[in-house]
Picture 1 (spheres, one colour):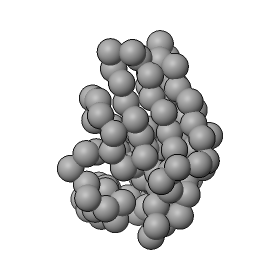
Picture 2 (cartoon, helix red, strand yellow):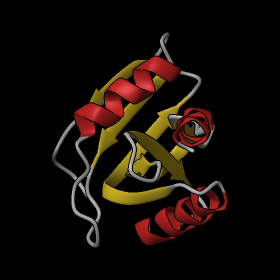
Picture 3 (cartoon, helix red, strand yellow):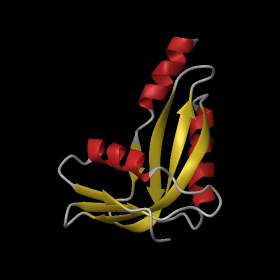
Picture 4 (cartoon, one colour):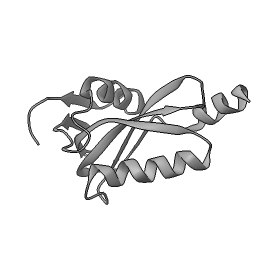
Length: 122
């Protein structure tokens, strides 16, 4: 029921990104059937296209009975030695994610980082 769906939703990590480097990311709204949703960030260097990230994420969520939609994409530059993440760019297929939302999610996961964002750049 709805309780199980909310529980499944709560188990989905808000942020899953690579430990360092420059890579594409997508902002995805995850939804339990008929219930509330939440936005999550997924960014990995193995993805050649933003769609690769979204499709992998959608498959994983579907196995837990959750649906999702892509809100947009961009790029992340993650410098762990400097404790910095910069959010920028856009996805040709999905459009630009709301980088301010992504930045807030990243700040929650990396509270000791300096996290910045900009709308320019590809």
